[in-house]
Length: 110
Image 1 (cartoon, rainbow, N blue to C red):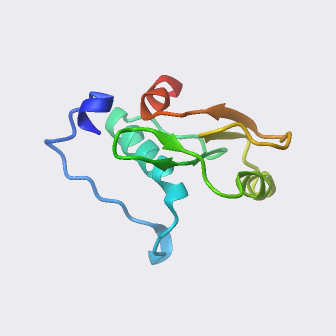
Image 2 (cartoon, rainbow, N blue to C red):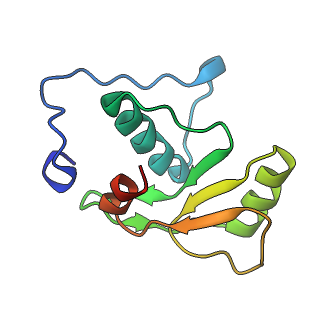
């Protein structure tokens, strides 16, 4: 990630803590974790109305996840207005979606 994003994280300790001690086995959380790391490094908050859904590969590609349309429907019920995803949803959604197919595009979005 250091080379792909050109963010000098080697001098930092990065800890991920999930509220309530939930164990994450879902790869769709990869993009959200990466967004949180970048947000912390740049000291810029992420909007509470934005979600990140995607699996991040070791080479920096963002892969689509199973049941994206179902996930976006659930996000609408949680008052989410923006979603960063690996692929446009099949169904038209009330959520504004941004396609992020590689991690460098995540930096462009910030």
